[in-house]
Length: 237
Length: 237
Image (cartoon, rainbow over all chains, first blue to last red; front, side, top):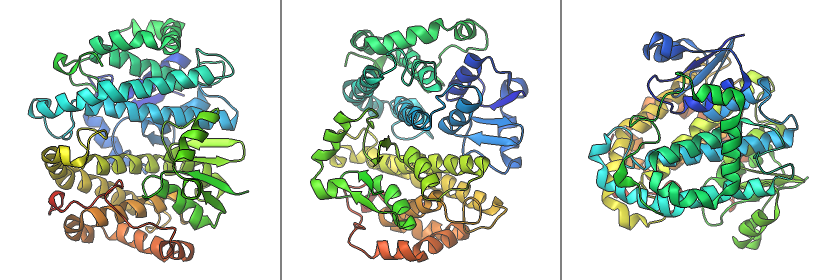
């Protein structure tokens, strides 16, 4: 079975959380809009019984599912990227939802007034929002992730259990995005979170992920993406 | 088994999505902070193996789960408020995640610069964000909900299947919040979405929900809540 991922071309974006899961599992998939263009996204959305409010969405035979966390909930079972035990499976999902919140805040730093206006038209507001993001929000989120790694009874390089999960892959992706967008901030903060660093190093060293990151399928960061490098928004915490 | 809900006192907030599910099912629960004060929230968070990034969280014996959508995923099974069929169960969850996105945008209208500053210190920014919210975002979300109601093969007063689900309850709660915060806007828009209206009327008429809404357990809206009535942010779309 070949999975079909539907997501905008040209950015990592929210699609990347799905790509990392598919790539880590070595699952066959098509990145449909990269083959057929972005027009396919709305076309398919009009046709299916369960249209996603926005990309990404995934098609697996008769199943069409949207919302990153719901897609990963589904793939976690299919690709063995989540614990089988229901309580840990739910905890993995809870962590993923927290990552989703963090990602959205990372986006809203450069679009505090709304996604409908260009960054250039909301720059003063972005400067204010970025200051709070750097000083309050990033340390709060990273402290939480470091803390739950420390509390994981089965080891501290995985968020849940003793094996790779989709949440580990997603945390890696967030940290990669933060490093791209906020090199000054992360140069200061990152050393304070040794468990997150160890997790990210383990993910980056995973054989299939390493191959993916070196491939042309992995797009570089850019200023249309969720995490954007605007130097004026970056500073120490 | 008595469920324990942990959430801030004084507001409906995100806790209300959980309360509505518990109330609709007639499930026994304690609203712990309302009995013991807000201090219990951080105390319990420090003690458990799966601490939530923020309230609400739910305790059910040994299970402690946070994030509204994850709590409802869990309760949907336990309280029979979601379809049993896996594909529809996933679709219900996907809808809930879209509701969560909508709720957050409803909050950010009055806190575009960040939750760390008072509304009074981000009023001009809120005015700009509210204009986009009214003209673009609310119609886009409501159109999506109306559309999936129209596509539900099992009936159009439920988002999924032919019975009440936690997603129906949550959509009711969002609409109630919007009506509170944006009476002018919703006076204009709401008549355009007859299926959402029928769903909300059905939820409000549900015997246990009707009793709950008339009880002292249901707090009135206020300007510490997610949805706030600031007349300067309200206008036609």
